[in-house]
Length: 400
Image 1: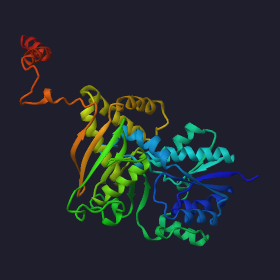
Image 2: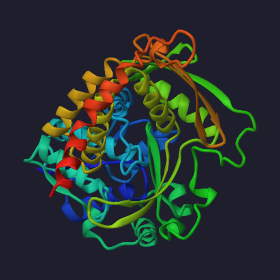
Image 3: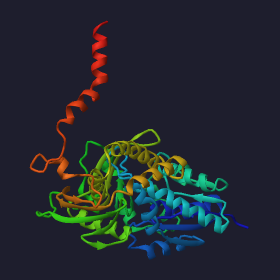
Image 4: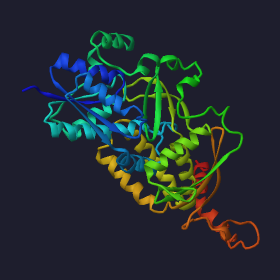
C-alpha cells in the first residue's frame, strides 16, 4: 500500500509544486491540509481545485480562526509580546497551530510523513518541526526546500514542464509573503538590501501614512481580563475584532514595521511586517495595564514578556516554560479590565483616555490641588530609610 504524506498547503508557488515533487521523489499519496488562520482566502476554492488537479489524493480545509484567536493571539496579547520590541509575532504563533492540525490529520490518515514548505535558513522550519516532534515524534518530516536547489524562477519552469498549476500572483510578485489574523510578513526582492526604502508595492494591509486621512479616527476598545471584547461599545468575538481593527487601523497607516531581525538560525534578515490590529491593541492594553497593575508586578511582567516573545519566536510554544509564563500572565491580566480610547492618525496610535473599574490611580493621592490627602510629612522618613544603605556604604568606604 502506498504511504501517505500530509503537506502543509497554502496554495502558493512552493506548496503547489511540492504536490508533484513529493509524488515524484517519495512515491507517496499527498494529503494537502490548508489551515485557515485568518489569512485572506478569496481564492480558497481555486487553491483547493488546483491541489486536486496537481495530484493531491485529498484536500482538508481547517477553519482555525477562532482557535487561533483564543489559544494563540489572546495569550500573546496578554504578554504584549513583541520580538526585539518591534515584531508582534504573527507568523511565529501561527506555525505551532498549523503544525498541530497537520499532526491531527496525519494521525487520522495513518500518514508516515509530514511535509512543509519552509526554507532551510528560516525560522519556520524550526517552529513546525519542534511542534511535530513534541506532538508526534514517530512521524517523519520532509522539507523539500532543504532538498531541492531550485530558485523561484526555476520552480516556475518546473511547474510548466510538469503541468503543475500555480497561482498567477506567483509569476508576478517578487516578494515572499505570509498572512494571518495577527499580521502580514513580507521579504525577498528589493527588500533584501537594508539600504533600500520599503517600496509601496510591498504593502497590502496599510495605507501610506503620507496618504492616510487628514483627520484622526477615534476608537474605544473594551478589555475584559486582558482580552479585547468590544470596539466603540459593540461586543465582538476576538477574531472578528482583530479583523475589524486591521481594516480601520490599516486605513490610517498604522502597523508598518521595517526591521533587521536576528533569526533563530543565526543570520540577520530584513523583514517587513504589517500588523495594524496588533500594534493598536498592544498600545491600548499597555495603557490599561499602567492604570491597573501595581508597580512591582508591572515591572516584573516586562521581563516575562520578553521571554514569552523569545520562546514564541523560537518555536517553543508547546513547552513547560511558555505554559508557566502564560499561567502567570493569566493571573496578572485578571485585573486588566476597562476601556481605552485611541486616535488612529497617519501611522500613529495616540492615547485619548482610559478608564478601569479597578483603577489604581487615586486622584486624591496624585493631585497637587485641593483635596490632596497624601501625607507629605511622611516623605522625609521614607527617604531616610530608603537611602540608608547607600548612605551607610558611602560613609564606611570613605573611611578606608
